[in-house]
Image (cartoon, rainbow, N blue to C red):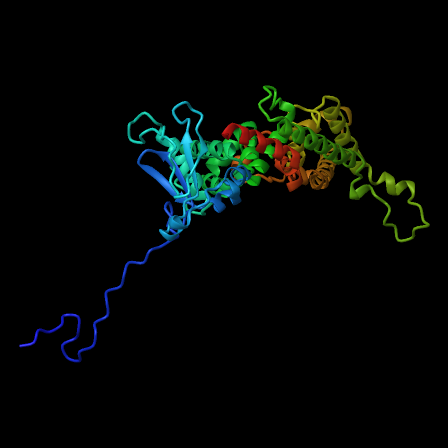
Length: 424
């Protein structure tokens, strides 16, 4: 009896389809089969990545991994599917000066350079260093970063470590968005921290080029500038210059508002809307307005006293308490008790006092519109939290205020050259 070919169907003698072969992917992090760059971070662990990805991510890698610096692979190596032309080793980890340095690769894609890499599991090397570099490489490939976002402290620790690695290799832009996202997810915890320590956060934001965090920090810095926010010289000089300029602009804005307040006449005393423009109001018309004129005089007296005592924009709080009272109106200032003291000099009937107070309230309501712009909260703090702060939060921040937008090409070139010398 003939033996049936197990490779055919019994009924029709049709060849069975072969089982599908496993698909070899060339796009899987951290080892790509077509990668031309080997990166060793420790014995027993490595990455096979792409030099062109590194070059796009950093001007430093653009020079370290230039095409002419890669190995010229032999035909035999190419025939065997060898693609590796570059090698980078992570050195200086144990000394606290970790960096990636190039190693020579021969025509067969091999490197004879002796390995001085530590064993990643010997317990002597900080695991954080490997994680920071791993996250950096992930950022190059738009992979999800493994940052500990359990709370603000752990998130900031990981972000700072990653930032230091990125700065060393001139590729901060590659991590900027990821760092922004992980920190902004902390929400009000982050914004409260910024309000309490804006100088440190401004420095961090400038390093990582985070518009959101820098804007938040700058609003608090300028709002508290006269409180000696940078007495310790903590701010980077470029940020301090921005603060000085914005503070001067802010002071001019407040001074202008105060001048408009002093020059304001209440609607009840103005006569410019007369039906006949050629007819001048008579004495009796002005005499009938004695109460609103008295309210105007008392307000200006109060205002002038506060200016003389430097409670206005020259105050240590930038005039916050002064403007806050005027923004509230009502009984927030020049209340009934203060008006009673005025009546000691200018006594009047109970009805007269009521009329006077009504005109005073109306005038204070008009003044509110002048200071409303100063009470705007342009931070991301919740309103209740913002009200607990004793400084103004209305500063407008634009992209032109970001220090990193003013770095010159020559500055960047000098930094690149210094990094190249260090790497070599």
